[in-house]
Each structure stands twice: as structure tokens, then as C-alpha cells.
Length: 438
Image 1 (cartoon, rainbow, N blue to C red):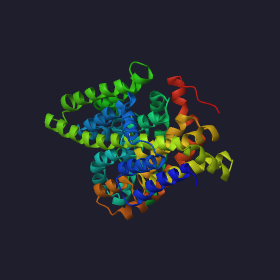
Image 2: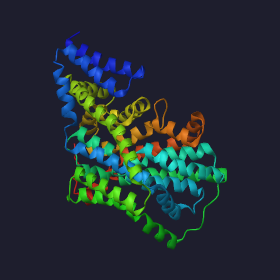
Image 3: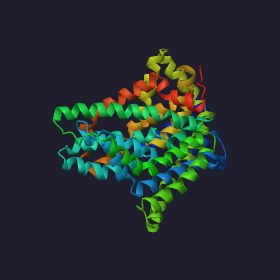
């Protein structure tokens, strides 16, 4: 056995062992990289250099700004206004509050970019409201956690910035545009599933549709939705970079939350910023250690070996795409979202593009949605745990109630995987993106 093979075994074996032992993911990534470098005889000074290099990226500066923007807007009384807007749009349907929950998540996701923030913020309002109106608690929680994944696709999503940086050479603006239709497709499939369940269980309709009420709620919610417009339009039109747009969005969010909606005072602002620092510390440590881990993978030619291993099973394009989705779903069950993007992208992207013929942007949407589904699955599903806590419902009951919605999400995932234009239509039309053909 040569030294390279031993290094691969040490790198991946120690990483998996530490994950199973419930090490913090950043420690697992960093320590396995250190052990691999020791085996290869590489100076540990290079470990420090690679970690610093990993976070010394201008585009990555957008991540803390987007997280800050989401926390400020989420703490500034935006949730109630977006719920009212969603209610005026779809509250008249059968199972109206479930439909409101799904549409509100689409709106709120475009502001927070976080499934956890969506579940905690909207769930704390909508789940008790739904239970009071006669909806089952487990159903209410299941709708909330599954619809929260829309926020991962709808821009501005900091996870898309992480993917763009990891993949290299991908336009953040094009990725932002690519998320709208997949997010809408996911919302539509969940709404259909909710409607069917609502009819079977006899959940009631809401108030009749009123165009006047809709226009009023649009006027009230305009300031919140404008934050997304500033970011997406500014980046796509080339007015400023993703990082600059994120910085502008933070200032705008501060003004809207404190002076227009008045949902935050200055004490609340400092509390929100403290929350941001805690989140950012975790994210940036992950990015830094994953940079070293990615270097080890590349040095040992693990992506090439993975490609050969997968293609040795089959050369059928459809089966290969299904295999990639299955790998990402399994990873999502045992790891959090950011580590999957940082670790799996260098390995799976070449397979997806060169062998399966997927566009890098389309694959980015596939990765994000798979990771989102993973957030809802035990044993590591963070959003599942948050939803159970917010809804005060045992996790087992929530998982059972979520099963029909898993089917809805898988249908959306398969459509996105095999119909490229769902992801690429808007980047082509508005962003001038030219899909890569292999």
C-alpha cells in the first residue's frame, strides 16, 4: 500500500470516525486534514496558510453581511407583515393557513436566507395560530419545517455564495436568479400536498380573496421585499458586487427595522449583532478548515478516484444523476449544510458537469435542495429539532407527519435534476448566462 492510499484512508477514515463520535464538524474537518498532512510529511505551517487563504476571499465577505441582514430583518417585526401578505394571496384556499405558511416562507426566505431562522420566526407565530384554528400540531409543524427550505433557494442565500466560492468561477448573480423558479416549484409541490391533506382532514378555508386587501398588504410589505430587490437587481445589473450589495442591504435592513417598522430598538440591534457573531464564528471556522480539507482531497486525487468509482457502477446518465442525489441526501442526514457544500462540491462537481452533463449552476441548486432536505431528517436535522421545539410536538410525530411532504420535495428535486431550464431560464433571460455544454 503506497503512501497516497494510506493518506486517503487516514483523511476519510478519521473524518468519518469523528463524525460518528459527534465531534464538532469544524474539528472533524480540521483534525482529519492535520492527520493527513502528517502522513504525507507536509509542514503544518501549510495548514495555517490554507485556513487563512480559505477565508481571504472578497466574495466570501458577502456571507457575514447576508447573515446580518437576515437577523436584523427577522428581528425587526417583518414576519407578521409577510404572513399578512401571504394570507391575502392564498388564505382563501382549502387549508388556508397551511398555504399561508408555505407562501410566507417563500417571502421570508428571500430575506433571511436561512431555514432555521424561517422555522423559528414564522413557526413561533403560525404553528400556534394553526393549532388554534383546528389544524393538527404535527401537520402544522411539518408544513413549517418543509416550507422553510424555500429560503435556501430564494436569494439572497449565503449558502449559494459559499457554493459559488467553492465551485470557483460561478456568477453569484446568476445563482441568485437560478433560485427563484426552483423555490417556486418547491412551494407549489408543497401547496399541492397540503391541499390534498387538508381536503382529507377537512381543514377549513380562510377569508375570501380581496384584491384591495392584497394591494394594501403589498404596500405595507414593500419595504421588506425591497431589500431582496436591491440585492438581486444590483448584482444582476452589475451595479455592484455581491459583497457590496450585501453591505448595502445590511444598512437598509437596519433603517427599515429601526425607523420604518420600528420592530427593533438599539438594544435589540446589539443583541441581533451578538447573534450574528456567534453564527459567523461557526461558518468561518468551517470555511477555513474545509479549505485545508479540500486541498488534501485535490492533492490525493480523490475527485478523480470518486469519478472512476461511480462510473464503474454504471454509465447511464439518469442513474448517475440519481446516484449523486442519493449521495447528497445521505450526507444531509449526518452533516450540516455548509460542510456538505464545502466538502462535497470539489468531489462531485466534476462528475456532475463532465460525466452527467449538468450545468454548474443547475448542480448548485441540486446541492442546496438536497442539503435542505437533509436539514429535515434525523439524526442531525437541525430544522427538524427546531420545528419540534417550536411546535412543542415530539420529533417522532413530526417525522411521521412530514413523510408526505418528503415525497413532494423529492418530486421537486427530480424535476430540477432532469429539467435544466427550471434553474437556467432566469439566468439566461435576465443575467445573460450561457449554459455550459459538455
